[in-house]
Image 1: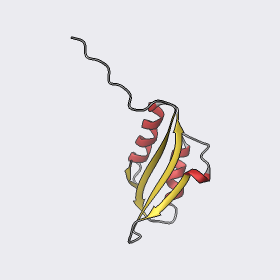
Image 2 (image 1 turned 180 degrees about the vertical axis):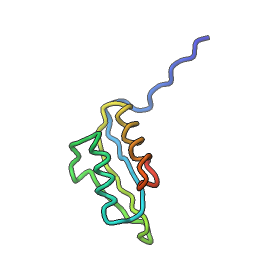
Image 3 (image 1 turned 30 degrees about the vertical axis):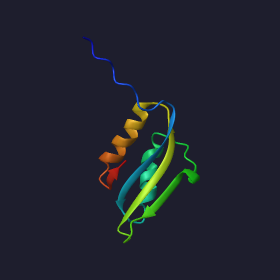
Length: 90
């Protein structure tokens, strides 16, 4: 019996809210946005937000982007996850 190909959970293009977390240093948010803009150049400032942890040690940066393909989304997550300043990307 032939195995069926897995169904895509998302239909592309789709809007994603990508979140990256790291230490709250002076340019962490700009660093995250710079990485994401390598793959999605036109991100309006209104689609970028950040939030400090309760004690201010960490910063979570959320960037809302429209991705055209699963590969584009995967490339963004790989770039964020491989960056030494980023502790987690979801």
